[in-house]
Length: 617
Image (cartoon, rainbow, N blue to C red; front, side, top):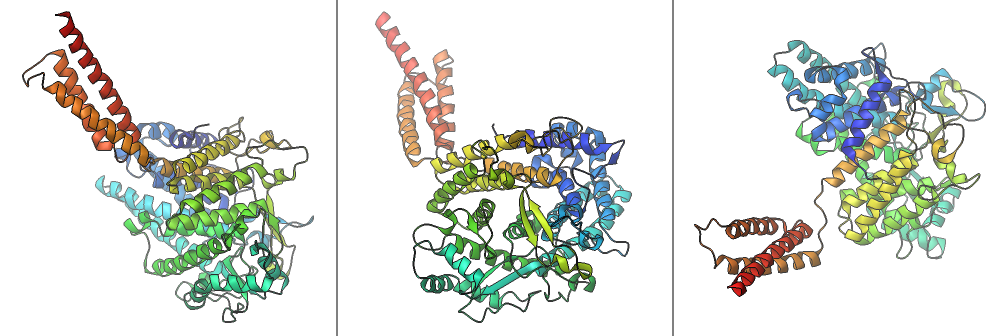
């Protein structure tokens, strides 16, 4: 199906109001019990497009689009829509703040216990990187919304609204500080001997040329010298003391663990209950939480955040610490993903992590970090061409573009999802079962990164392949939409594609729906880029323009300025066509080619008519 971001986002908003807004009350539940993360995801389904896409803005009532106002009419009139959104943000803060005013990021119902045991109440209050990252994105969106909506309130002299916005800003900013601090303290560097089990796995994954392991380990160390130096010298805030980066014989990996790392240093310039909170996470990076953290940091570093001046001095310090980690992490994973001179390790699917786990999903996550790194820097055509092959292979292996077979193990990538053991969670509250995180976003990760790669590509064939793949993934997701009940139009019914017990699900998954929204916002950004132009097409268009303009000049020799005949009117139209073609020839050569072709046809018609008239006389 064609990806139509505007219409699809409006459809999701309409479905959200049907599912969540009844009797002027917002309902926060979904397929799983509400928690801090799902609350953030639910509001982001509404607020992320509203703050990332100009035509969806809800913070300027006087400029609100008619179709947006119509979809959200349950909230009230134009001004009431913004006020209702303000109220939802206030309710969100009330729900996710402790009585003593401390922000909460508990994962709650998203956590699973291994075996038959249930997580303890203390374990359900555990904070994970997903909670920090989603809160960062929501806080940035909320602060941006409030900043612009306050201008309307002051213009309308609504002191009551301005007062509420001031309070909201203070509370949301405190939450943003806590979430950013959590991200800083969840970053980890894990060192290992090349001869240790984890070191042997890493070297084995990177050794695509069959060289001796010692040679590969030395080559890896040389490739990562700058990354190691920056980790040693630049990453000082909230770090752990276990890594041994000074020993250059050791290999290392970096990224985000599942939560605040056990033994991480406190951040002394934020409130102690935030900057010195006890961490339990194992000091080892998880690919899933790494890409989630990178996405949240993107929003902190975005141009909109800078333009609206949304960060205070403390947050600027945290943002700089996160920027350093964001940059180093992308460089690390982009280097190891493309290590060597022949086959990329990333092309050797599935990816194996240093703890010995392997999955197609991990290959997709490393691809996501690579695309993220290419977004931040200029991507080469070779990088993107090889990435296309990886995405195509993952789409087939993940049964996105191929039908699943009976008892197909690939189905588990989508339902129930990839299980990740949260090492260290068993130490909470004196001991308990080790918890697990389940990631079921394979399809949306593939869609989002395909669209990002298409936006980067300067090759027409490569972009076309990526966009066709994106359409196929969107087809897959469209078959997983809930079709019955109040939540019809939201996600997720994986059983509709893969079979199983979830074919009649009528409760929304905010985890999945929010990720579809992210994909649609990415699609909007991709579509707004200028179309790719073929140098050969530019040349052909210029050739046609030159011929058409010469013929037009010849025809103009036969008419005067005061001539009002049909021929003169037709020539004026041709002149306008050619002027427009000349304007767009360098950015839309296909359009210029078509305009010049139409002008040539009209000029030939006029010339033939004149010739025919001459013969008749």
